[in-house]
Amino acid sequence: MSATIKRFVDYAEISVKAGNGGRGCVSFRREKYVPKGGPDGGNGGDGGDIFFQAHFSLFTLRDFKYRKFYRAKNGEDGKGKDKTGKKGKDVLIKVPLGTIIKNLETDAVLADLVVDGQREVVAKGGKGGRGNASFKTPTDRSPRRAEPGEKKETKRLSLELNLIADVGIVGFPNAGKSTLLAKITEARPKIDDYPFTTLSPNLGVVKLQNFCRFVVADLPGLIEGAHQGKGLGLQFLRHIKRTKILLFLLDVSLKNLKKQLAALKKELKLYDQKILEKKKFVALNKIDLLSGKEKEKLKLQIDIPYLKISALTGEGITELLELLEKELVGNDQEKRGKKVVRFC
Image 1: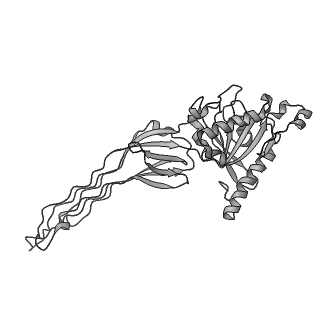
Image 2 (image 1 turned 90 degrees about the horizontal axis):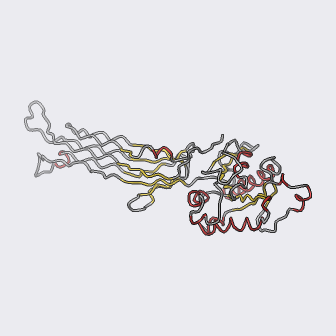
Image 3 (image 1 turned 45 degrees about the vertical axis):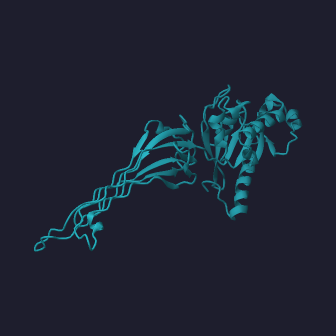
């Protein structure tokens, strides 16, 4: 199982309206030999709710670019013989894992959906109005009043997708991120030898021999000033927030490896310092361009574990996957006493 995001959309604005409550009914019993029966007007039904639900098979908010308005059904009016109107039909909207739903008018977060199947109500239907049977009292045995149903206003919402991946590949343009993703998963991102081939995040699933799997995200290349929105900066930096592991991919053909790493870390720190608190690894890519002696001499004095790989030929890839698997499974074993790598 794997996925490649096509026509990726990670932000959308929509409007939703929960159903109005149904009207209460004014009615009186009409029975043989009982000319003046008591009130029997039923209550109106509640309006339908608007739900959002996270679903693992979705990876983009593209559909919300075409449909902008969602409306639940109104509750039915109450009826005689104390019959309550039916509740209005709910609306269930499915979104990718990692979707944050906000009220555009208040900027309040209404839901943050990070678990498959997680469901939240973002617009509650209106309460049905009471029928006249509810207003009967010892002093008013024949009330002729009922309540209208509660009316609901339209809400304007923003949907913001922060991808959930176990490993996020971070590097400059042309570092080989898409090539690496294609090598270790069945994802087939666009690959070419020019900057910004990857214009949107790509997801792939690494299949392990123990039948466990984990998700890897190939993110568009960083450039200096990305934290200020330069290049594709702010369009994708937020997707790094939810990853468990950062994999810095450095291009050995460009030399100055420590400078490359420092620049990448600087951009992440300026965007959100907490990102650098995640577990980090470094992969020195394109060693297929080096001679045997150059490979041996290739060393990096840093405080982050690193490996030498070639995403093109596959050299060092097995060791890289073993390192990532050990980190993912090991952390979960310590915290929960069992493996919970995604899709195990």
